[in-house]
Length: 185
Image (cartoon, rainbow, N blue to C red; front, side, top):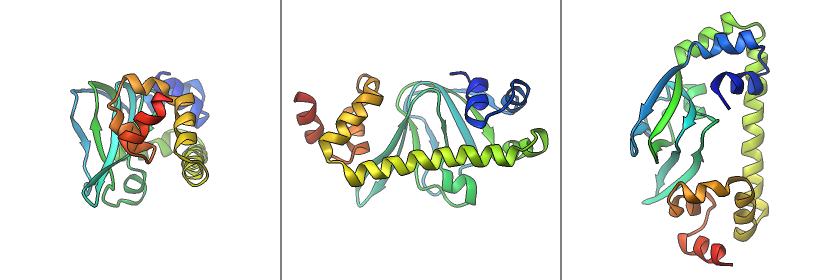
């Protein structure tokens, strides 16, 4: 889905509003293994990924934890840092060559003056993001490793051919060995 179409769909914007918002986004390309955000820095950009994959991760007690792998068609940022001006809790690293659009926080804030009811539309979008986060937490609390793996396969099977499996294992809260065993089943 294009940037404009995603803005229109996710924020319930009109064609003209989506075009206005899209004008604030700047296209970029990055090579594999490029750091887009580091733990401790402030998230000053909101990204919309159009090509490639980005790993969202951090180190915890000497262990790398993958929080998410972003695929084309998604908006990403370190939300706590973006919203509350806190240091980022996550690293963003490209897993493949990447094409994306970014908007600075300053430019993003300009949209309030350009699009009627922007705050309501933005709040609804943030609610959608929160709902996805709740669903993911519920999966971790209510499903065993195999159930999480099967649910992941139903929605994101394409990632197995795109990213290293140890990152998928971490994302699912299991060891690479457990993931390999489940895949063999």
